[in-house]
Image 1: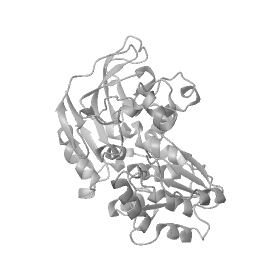
Image 2: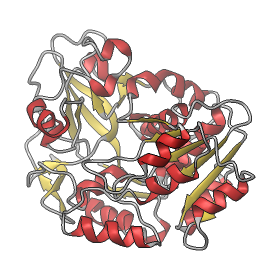
Image 3: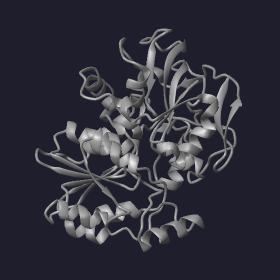
Image 4: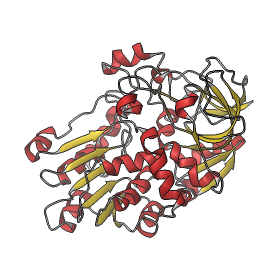
Length: 389
């Protein structure tokens, strides 16, 4: 089959690789009908996530049709149309039983690697390095799905692939980011980063009852989408100090909650941004917390900091004194996708949201290298790339 494979920083290729096979009775093989490039994939593309190996198949946002089932999978049928959560979860461990699906104890065969780096291992992830299991991803024609009886989510008739594809990751991720803000009626939420996850965080904040959402970015088309599709007030941080602007827009008190939808490759305009870029370039710092610093300082006292943006290692000069002094509450982590599948599907079905609004580029699987470069460099007003095998 054809698959998008990682061969080094800024080097992805469409290779011919062996078709996946059933390895465990709880496996399924899915023929992929639609997949996508995620902002998290750019961390792999840029070479910032360790334990990648040449030839690894990328991709963790994918859906398709069940074409083969392991003998223990009894709740699915050949031909079922399914979406695949990016987190791989067993469904029966301590964490899965508590709806903490991305913290599954049993799905990462390389748990020892994560334990050395993080103390404990979270769940395995599709197409996201050997640190998280070394699983082949879904930017391919076919994929093996472990724990398919738990992981695969059947899609009812009448919905297109593009309407439901983002249930695999970015819609639940944006929604959980907003949920972690503990939004109350009348609240103002500020979202740093208007990429795909930021766009869904904006929409989700309103779904959860926010009165105002302020969106911060520097890319005109992202800010335009946040304003027109998300009804957000916008700030271009290259034109003004975003932290001070947010305070002014909230009468000096600061937003009730802030969302870091940027993560480890944040950009900025100040000396701290230059400092981060220099240290990360020579690997003296693994992550650039430029946006995180700013939003911690901007958040009101007693507010909530939600962090869906991916961080991979160690941060430098984070203002924890300010966070402590202001009594901020932090919530973060990989998304517990399984928890949100049914309720978010219902939002799609009742017309509250059509997640396809975020798509700007559609390409064939063979054009994935071009898609990665276009997405990374924000060419042609690119916000989200969907691939069709």
